[in-house]
Image (tube, rainbow, N blue to C red; front, side):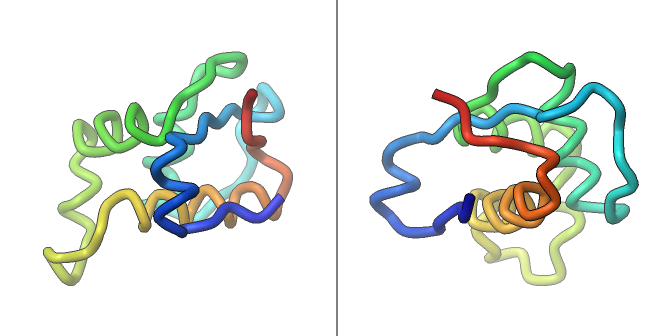
Length: 91
């Protein structure tokens, strides 16, 4: 499953969920914040909810460029997690 950063995909406000209960080894920093915002297992989060949750965990403070699009950054990390089969797009 490839997670797109296209405007059409973003406008659809896709929803995501973890695929397993146990936490796998993942990158520290932004990817950890995204993963933690998807917890607990069994919950489903829209991209808009993830932006709010990540913002609450000081996600933007990790950016080198303050103009970075937070949603596109989150989608990037969701794509990496999906490649490792750690998340799925929910219905």
